[in-house]
Every structure is written in structure tokens, then in C-alpha cells.
Length: 257
Image: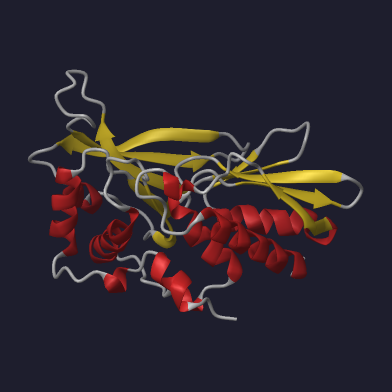
């Protein structure tokens, strides 16, 4: 069943951006909000953007526009590196984006900061997506065509406190939790977490490893994974909706296991 119109209106969509030059509009917003942050997955990398801290304290978020890159190594560890950066002004976020190489971003993995001094998640999410389409050639895949897992992945883009515990047959459990910057961890007791660049990858692993053993009716969500609309301007999808989408995604991967 396709998602309802109310949900679609809450997810970032570059088609809603009315700016004729989204790159210039994004530059203006980033200049105005030093606590902005956003990022996405591009191939085997997670890339995020923000201002580096200013040791003088003259600018709350700093004055060095930076990109930060995370990759997951074959042994499961993560490697963090710095990408293009420059002093702003004259450097701008659009100039930074133009310097990125590699595969085009996956807009279903877009996330934004929900800091109270950051721009409102929407329409900022629409604008960031539109700029990434223009500057980096990302595909503007419409959310109305998404499966349950991809919808959950889009919804997670502005709520970093997901923590779900899935019950398995034989009184075992496996947990799925957001791990910052849009990344997700999958963990069973007494072993190291497996980290994934996006929710869809973690869901695929959940289905492959545990799909036939999942007992979704006993799923629990930790209490600290609260409704984050109380923080700043809140996420684009409220936490109860995100939980519903995650459960639907888990049911989807369980069916195909």
C-alpha cells in the first residue's frame, strides 16, 4: 500500500523546493544558521557537513566549513576522515559540495540536525535535497514509490534516537539503534555491534540473519527514544510514526527471509 499524503508531506522532497537556484539558497541558509548540519550516504561513504568549532568563540559553530567522511572497514570498524573544507566566507557550502567526488548521493539517506539553533528540518530538508540534486547529480526518487524499509530510512533522517529491541524465538533478542550521522547499529547480547551506513543496510542484515526467528509482536522501543518534536522544531516525522514504519520494514524483511 502506498504511503498516505500526510506522511509524504512530512518527508523531504526536492520537488517541493521553489528556489530557482537551490545552491545559492542553501548558501544563504548555511550562512544564517551556524549550527546547521546535514549529510547523506554516497556509495560506501557517509558524508556530513557542518562548521568546525571556532576556538575564539566569535562564531558559535565556527567559521571553517568542513565535510566529514565515515567508511566501514571489512573488519566492521569505522574509519573517519576529513573531506574538502574552507574558510567561510569566501568559501560556501555549494563550493564544498562541488568538490566532492565519487558516486552520487542517495537522497533516501538524507539527515539534518534538529539542534534548536539549526534551520527547521523542513523546508531545510527540501532545500538541501534540491541542492544535492543540482550539484551532485543525485536522483530525486519520489517517496510515494518507496517500500516500507525505505520509508523508515527517510523518516530516520531527523530523529537520531531510535532504539528498537526485537524478540527472537528461543528468548533471544537483537537491537537496532541509531548511531549518529544517519548510521545504524545492529547488536545481539554479548557481541560487538555491527554498524551500517543506513537503516536499509541494517534492515537487510536483520532479515538475512534473523528474519525467520523474529517475533515482531514482542518488539520494544526504549523509553529514551521519545517524541523528539519537543526538541527545537522537531523532526519531520514524529517518533510514533517512525516506530510504526520501522516495524513495517522489519515485517517486510522477515517476509522475504
